[in-house]
Amino acid sequence: MIGITSYGAYIPFYRMNRMTIYGALGWLNPASLLPGEKAVANYDEDSLTMAVAAAMDCLGGIERNKIGGVFFATTTAPYRERQNAGIIATVLDLRPDIRTSDFTASAKAGTGAFISAYDAVTSGSADNVLVCAADCRLGKPAGYLEEVYGDGGAAFLMGDSGVIASVEGTHSVSYDFVDHWRADEDRYNRAWEDRWIRDEGYGRFISEAISGLLRKYKLAPKDFAKVVYPCQYIRAHADIGKNLGFAPNQIQDHMFTATGHTGTAYPLMMLVAALEDAKPGDRILVASYGNGGDALVLQVTEEIQKARDRRGIRKHLASKKDLGSYEKYATFRNILGIDTGGRGEEVASTQMSTLWRERKMVLALCGSKCRRCGTPQYPPQQICANPKCGAVDEMDDYRFADRRGALFTYTSDLLAFSLSPPAIYGFVDFEGGGRWFFDLNDCDLESLSVGMPVELSFRKKYHDVARGIHGYYWKAIPVRA
Image (cartoon, rainbow, N blue to C red; front, side, top):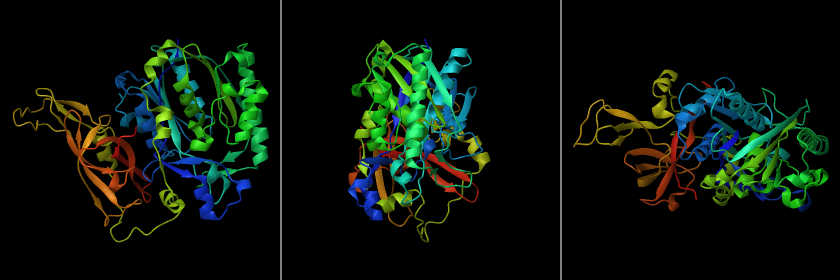
C-alpha cells in the first residue's frame, strides 16, 4: 500500500478582506464584488518560506533521516536557477543523499509533484518523498487577479508504511490552453477573458479529468465521500460537481472566500481540509486544474486517526489577523515603493562560500549538544558552556528550528527601518535549553510579554536585488493555536 503517510499546511497569519481592496480603489458596487477575504503573506514570506512552514507541520514527530526526496511545486519560485527544493531540504536538515526536484510553470504542478512522488515510491527509487506546494502570485494593482490570488502552502509525505490514505489510481489530461500566464519579463500574472476561463477551462478540463478517472477505474460519483477540485468561480465550482453527478454534501468547500486561489497549493490545501474530516474507509477524489488537469483516487485507512495532531487547514484558518490596509499590502509586495530613510541602507548579503560552510547553522538552525552533559548551544561550539562540564570536541548536531521557546526579553526599535514598523526583536529561551536572539514578527508590540510562548518561522531576511540573492533566516513568532 502506497500513499500519504502525513500531511501539513500553512496559511499566513494575515488576511485581507476584499472590501479593503475595493475601498482603496473606490470600487463599491455590490453587484461586482467578490466576497470574503484572501490570505496575505507577510513582507518576509514567499513561496519557499510557506513551503517550509507546511513541511514543518507535516513532519512533526517524524524522523527526518528517513526521507528520501523533496519535490517542490510552485509558479513563484524565488530562484529561476538555483534549485529551490534543495534549499528546502537543507532548511529541514535532511540528509544529502536524497532526490530533489522543482515542479513549476502550471497551477497543476502541485498534483504533478504529488503523482511523481507516488511513482517514485511505487518504483522503489525512494522510500519516502516529501511533496511541498506553495504560491505567492501577484495580480496587477486594481486588477481582477489581485482580488483572486491568495497565499498558502501544503505538504504531504508519501510512503509505503503507516499510510493514512492510499493512492488507488490517477488520470491526467494535458492541453496548451492559455488562460493565465506570465512571461519571463512579466512581474504580474496575466489572464484571458473570464467566461473563456470558466467555461472552456475549469468547466471542461476538470470534468474531463474526473470523468476519465471514473471510466478508467469503473467508479461512479456515489463511490466517493468527498470530491476535491479548485475553482476561482464560486457558482461554477458547484455546477462542475453537480454536472458530474455529485451531491452538494460530497463537494469539498472551495476555500476561495477564506484564502483565495493559492495556485499550485490550492487543490492540495483542499485535500488537507478533506483529510481533517475523513473517516476510515472514505474514498476521496482529488482533481487539479491548469493546462489540463490531474485526477486521483485516495482511500482513507485506519491510520488516519494518527494524523489528527497537525495544525493543518482548520487551525490555520482560525489563527488570523485582518491586515486592514491596502497600502500596507502594497508595501509588503513592493508594489508601493517607500523611502527607507537614512537608517534603511542595504545590508551586505551573506557570501555564498560562507553560506555553504555554515548552511546547517544558518538555514537549518542547527547548534550543538554536549554528549557528556546534554547542554545545547547555538551557534554550535567546540567547548561546552556548562561550567560544571567544559567538554571539548564532544558535540553532536542539535536542531533548534522545531523547538518552541519562551520570550526572555524583547524591545522595539522605531529608528531601524522595517516594512512593518516598529522593528521588534528579543531573546528566546528554548525548551530543553539554549538561548538566542531573533527578530519577531506576526505580532504587535502590545501583544508581547516576557515569558510568552513563541515558535520559530523560516523567513526572508533580505533581498539583494543587485546580486539577485534572497537571504533567509529564522524569526520568532507567537505560537499559533
